[in-house]
Amino acid sequence: MNNQPEIAHTQSLLDKHLPPDIFEKLKDLQTGSGFTLHDAVRSGRENPDSSVGIYAGDAETYRVFSEILDPMINEYHRFSNDRRHMSDLSPTPLEDPDPEHLYIVSTRIRAARNLDGFAFTPFISLTARRKVEQLFLKAVSDYRLAANSRYIAYENLSDKEFQTLAQSLPLFRKGDRFQESAGINRDFPKARGVFFSDHGGLLAWVNEEDHLRIISMDQGSDISGAFTRIADLLTFLENRINFAKDSRYGYLNACPSNIGTAMRAGVHIRLPGLDRQRNTLYRTAEKMNLQVRGTGGEKTGIRDSIFDISNKQRLGITETECIRTLHNGVAALIRMEQQLSGSL
Ligand code: ADP
Ligand code: CIR
Image (tube, rainbow, N blue to C red; front, side, top):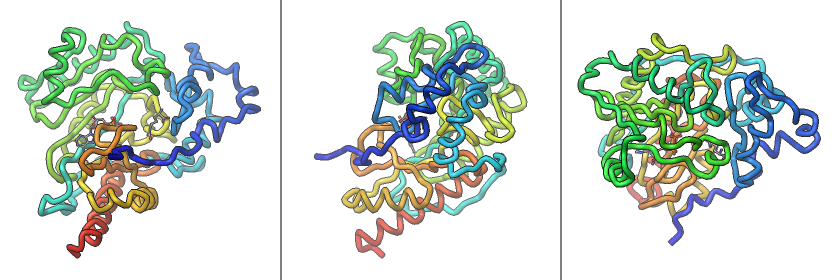
């Protein structure tokens, strides 16, 4: 049985926008704290099947390597140099795209954040990682019913305890080979953990690919509800932590595919008809600015015809537009699925 996402690999953004002659020209550049072009492209070079292929070691990477990063960012996000990123986290009521609960299994919205003044995870020291963890836990300690929240620090867990917890809680694991090559797994599992708020579906991954991944998730298809919850925590943190931000590029993150809103709003959706016509699914997704991922996350296979569909673009659109993109796209995919199964 074929359970692979079946996305034909195309050239990475790195290979497309950093041909050997430009690499030669820029190869001695580095940021103030010493993050080099070699560091930035290691993951893409070691993993030729990368789709992006480059990581930032700090906020300054986006300025020092702008000649390389700008065109990659513009292509990925359909952005252009004359534009500035805007944010909008206001409540956004949307009709339930799957009122009979036939297709959407669960909804998950995440936004990445990095603390200003700290290296990003490909380049961060263990001491700085610990500081990031402390600063976040302090900031979040008076978030609503903090007494009913909990932090699971990875360092104190045996493998067996971790596996047991991971069966029922959305914990993150050590990063894949792309993240390994980038240096993101350094010192794992030290200074890593997951914070759960009093609402079980609102949590934060600490020191995964970014310093923070704020996540709102729930069974079912209540996209607006998930958005309201994440917006609340993001706004709370914004008033307490200085995040790495750029006036043109919005929030800055380890992977350039995540800058701007840093938001990936997605659903797990069962589409057995479109599973048999994956090329149609991928073409429609591309047209509607959606990304298709595997059931277990980025670069995993499809189980039981369940696809992870989310907004692809994160920069140049606001957070509310991210969820509208998801909402419109999912509604269209559901209509296609209904036509394929003859229920329309
Ligand atoms: P990220 O979203 O942080 O960029 P991944 O694509 O690796 O990274 O997804 C992270 C995890 O979230 C994976 O374990 C994936 O299965 C899970 N996940 C993603 N979307 C959903 C969803 N809608 N419902 C439940 N789990 C999800
Ligand atoms: C790659 O280049 O394929 C990996 N570094 C992951 C890039 C992030 N993926 C994505 O599509 N947003």
